[in-house]
Length: 226
Length: 226
Image (cartoon, rainbow over all chains, first blue to last red; front, side, top):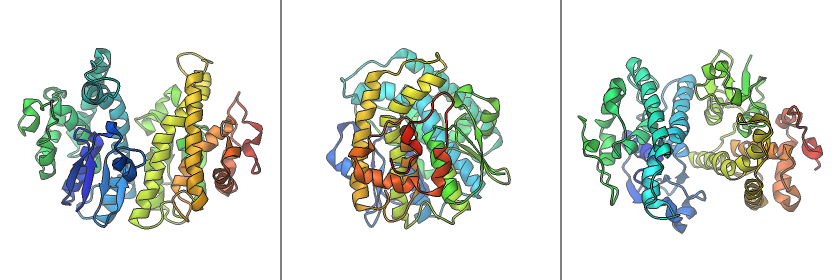
């Protein structure tokens, strides 16, 4: 059986879960805590990170970008990097934008500061988030939501008319932040409408039933009308 | 004319220069200082980073991983991500290993600490490198050279029998560090032989004539017998 080794709130794992869902590929989840440094995880991926996909036939694919390229090659039905070479370059650029720039400016400052420090930081349980970092993350999030609103006011999806892995990458980050109730959707109507469209897709269902032990999601997390 | 916007010592730009060379694609270089935040660079790439490729026909492709995928799709001759889907996944995994893990553990600690701080740090010219950071980078480099030696003792190239973008990614980082004379090749014979094979290829020539103003390379930098 196809298995995805993952960590529930990791935006990179969420992107891959959404991609597998969009491609209608059944899979089971194997939960990992990357902070534990489990030997079995390092045997699958020397970098010790999630996600790692173990596909049917036993092919092991670590790293979310490598997994998405692999899925697109092996399961081209329901394409997630559609279009011409120029279209595909734009999709990849946007995907790296979320997985690198958004990740550094927003996800690390909000999600890592609040969740990882509290539950998973090896230096000590329940360290307090630094408010200056959280504030800088919230400010950066507003700028990114503004940019997403500007794009989705003129395009149905981030890279154009078709849903792509760029939407799923963005949704990976935003849905993890949404779990904490950190996204001020109300002030960014086009971005909210785009996210409602994503959240209504069948691939999103499993993400909406995620519960991190000791840290339940905010009330509207699973609502399609939030 | 095809143009690559680059920064001479950036390992990501070096990877793309090597890839263009291996594919026998002529191009001109446009030097950028990413610390300057030039408006024209942001117009090409909202992230403000290099490399950015402007291909013939005006297609703009930012981000080194997106550029390499684009080149492989549009110019499939002299493939750099060859083989089956599993082979290609392994090549991409290794490439991200160098561009993320090696980058974080070695390149940032040695190259950024020495070069960027000295010449390009906006906070003040000629800041001193922190020795503890440089030492940690040197130690990590030895571990990585040991790993490269173990691989290249049994494989001609990092991902197998064929040269791939994984070799060029690794060479991007190592050649930039080599410019500073920071790589203790003598103690890692198989890694050294692999690097000599790479350095002898025509694509490497332009890199070996790079000179950063005010910071000439160490004497053996351009030698094939070092």
